[in-house]
Image: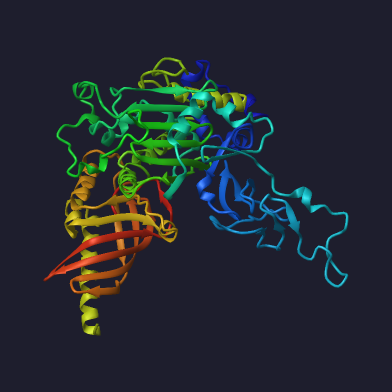
Length: 409
Length: 160
């Protein structure tokens, strides 16, 4: 029985999300097939993370372990991190340099395109043992991904049905990616978080422009992001990708204070406001742009703090969130220092992002025993369209639109 | 450097780290910035970033004022479940010293105890400290917390 037969989406449609989507093991397994190995482009890494020829790094296609390589000619490749022989991981280190990939288990070797090039003792030893001449181990090789790059970002897909990357993203999302990725990337570093929640809860959080200024009170108090700031959201036609943005300057009033919201505490000023000192490096006054690509990629500009994030599902209620922070090769020392200082806003200890590690887990813990109940996603009505305000859950509904299309739900 | 002087410096750094950890573990976060000089630097990073020569930190502060801001944010703005730490700190290894400046490296592990009672090994790593001595007083001019793992469970609220 398929999930579509076993489960019925609430009649209200995208304004209701049934809680079984976070707790159904069969659904989780089917997501791996239909979404991550299906017709989606998955962010693998920055091109800058494979700086030299003959280099590799590990990544994931959903839960599937993947190796991304740059060969001797500078070409990028990606393939499943699984040996054709007994299925062992081929690459154990996070990243490194190599001319070929050799499985540690039985020494089977591969080129950087993922082709099997050698089987140890294939013809046996002294005329004894070895593999029959008709055996074709090459046909069991690691699955190869199709790759596409956009402005320094490397995406991969296993499906032949995935449309070209720029078509998959749509013109508006492509333009917003190019806006941030304006120059060659300089890596600043990275870290990762284990989130105690289903991967979808984190992606909903990313797309939920309604929560940002309410949960993240640091944000609000310092007028980094209040819903009264000018901004808006873009939702792609598929629903799956989104951008939310706001101008750096706050022209708004006293709505938070008048409503007595926790986020509007008075008398909270930074003793060292240099933390927030930013330059308008993109020349458009936008101080915050959060962009997501279905299923699990996030490109983040928080003032001058830039990062890519990707998710690795590790089970129904556990997800790894991998952060890579970057600047550009034309940054001067002052700009690098600014980016590092503003990185205090993001990551597991980020003044803003800290709560995003925990909030999806709060949902996960509460809804596990309520699979037949639903969440109410009705801010902004039932729309999944772009809007010039952020008091809406349109991008969350857009996620579910794309999700249901792929899952046949 | 004679062994007696070596031992004296080691005791100074050990005492400073012990009192530093006690302030954090006893939830006296307001006292935490006072273990640093006025322009003291504090950074939490990973061994991977350090080995790759990458400067990013999870926490990146360059003054006592920035540390006070973090404490105020943890107290008044950020949302996280009630939790406490238990630091266990190894003996400091004095890398070198010059006049009043001491450079030391110290291993630590931190258990995190949630309000639910759940206790986990939260972090392991090393402190790379630059300590300045002024008479009996010792302060951090720089404290770099180098985590062995790049992975943080859920969030890092209380400083390490």
